[in-house]
Length: 123
Image (cartoon, rainbow, N blue to C red):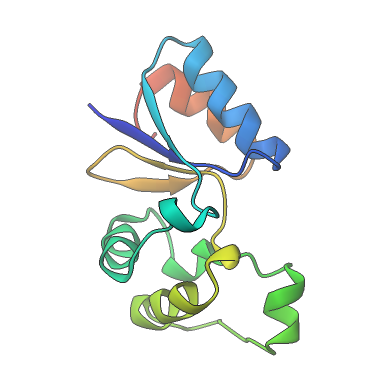
């Protein structure tokens, strides 16, 4: 099973998740989604939103200054509204996110990394 981690190397939770997966011996493709060349396009975001465990709105970092500055209130949003927001503001994508090709899951709480490492997939 191919594992892809949507990763921000400046986020301690994201670094912890990557370390846990690699320490468990899993091969992980790291995608630094904040870099322009590695950003997810609209179709990729839509696919991610449909496979995300939980509410698609959880893919947004609501405590981010950009979220507040834009005056966003995402409660009740559907996947398309989340995707449209992330296309315009990729920095609002929650991290880390593990994608095993079938399902995707946000790595919060931080303890979720241990579940991923043990299972070798979205737990």
